[in-house]
Image (cartoon, rainbow, N blue to C red; front, side, top):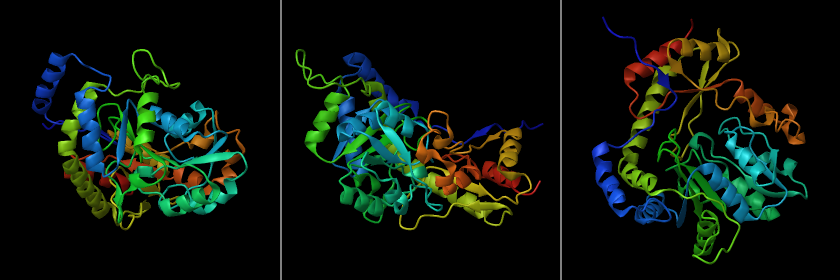
Length: 370
């Protein structure tokens, strides 16, 4: 008698072989230096900058704190144009920084903020932009960059989904004033928790390094009003070992994505997200459930759950529909028709490097007619 298949979640954290971690852990134990810019922290920052092809990396304990620090370093004051279609941490960071989010509708293909709609959100209180590379699909960085330059606005990119993502010219992290990565356990590259800020000059890196450690210069000097956003030595060591494997993880995810595309190409009532030409993204596998599907999006979501498949309705509800944001003028659903439609039709399917072809086939079969 065969046992029933185990549950499938949207993601499965990838970890390197424990044997590769043990020598680093023993070294950390022997040094007894667990935090505060230790040797593994320094090695990890350098290795990341090289791997990602960026000039400067500032490691932080999570991406939300990374966004807060980047917003503060941008010296924004007032309103920040952003997307309603994201994880709530994007707008929460804006609010924690003492700023007000201004929501702009998204593009129906890329699922990112629609650069053509940015002028509608502009007033004399707008101080900057916080777009997101949704599911690792690059924003219209050229359009956003032109708008920002024309109006003298800094850009902080939420790049939580964009580790290793590039376009024809290189890493998407080269755009904007800052990009913030997440190394949470659900991400393509993880250190359990963690993140990084990408910046473009040494002076800015120095200021961010101070801000993430209370603004402390040395035993007697505190230069700025900082907070505690340091990444510890254990997570930095894990990151160093993960870097050895991440290209394999990414390649495997791309193969699994193509497998889904082959399996679902002819499934009635299911539309696949359009591939973005000339880019390399690999974070999630979203599908869109058409209104004429017999079960509808939520019915299909429940059907999958009944069979131990935990798809996610990313991002539903929209940030703009949540009680702490819905009173904003820019949160009016009439202003966000594309984001509303997408949030009511999207499902993200389980996608991780070691998902089996048989499990993918099981998912695909359940998406068909009941």
